[in-house]
Image (tube, rainbow, N blue to C red):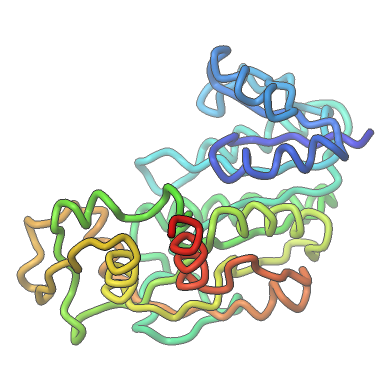
Length: 293
């Protein structure tokens, strides 16, 4: 059987492991031995390794035909040493992987002023978080050019799940959102759809090709929160002008409110032949409402 290695075995990756395990020999990296039981139950063989400890990665070389790279960068700095360590380990010895899919972020575009953007838009990340992903993408594309590994990059926006990945805590706290005049456009993708796109990119993606892994929604942030609140029967969040938000929200939340963009996703439909299970956030929330009624 062909072998798949998953690096970064979080929620999105775990959603696709059962499907992969019926078709491939799946190995998944974990940082601690005790994390292995959950992955075995899904059908993957756990491998203990730590991207922050390069010496632990030697066992990853030559063991996989395909790699799903879902590990985030560190939370500080402007580089991604974890991706650098992984790629160095893969070329250390043994055969190179044939294909690699990586989950990046739409934050690499920076603030687009609400304009529509496709994958050809220049990268102008405005936050260290976005700059770390720009660095990771550059390393991966250089790796693909140098080795012939077919690298595909998925730029994912806000990942949600109508069951358990919604801004419920913020709604209960009554955290404010921006007034319509100041509000920003946000982009979304359901975790199930992102998991499927990850595999589609692995087998249908072009070499060193980038894809906006987002749904068809074109919501402002306040509209998104209102939609979730209405579905859950919670009060809509208060609206405040941007000038009054400082000190009311975390720095990370404020950074998301500083960037506005609407992303085109024709490439995932045309090249990956993807059909989203949840084309919009509203579709997913309607499914949740129907299931709980």
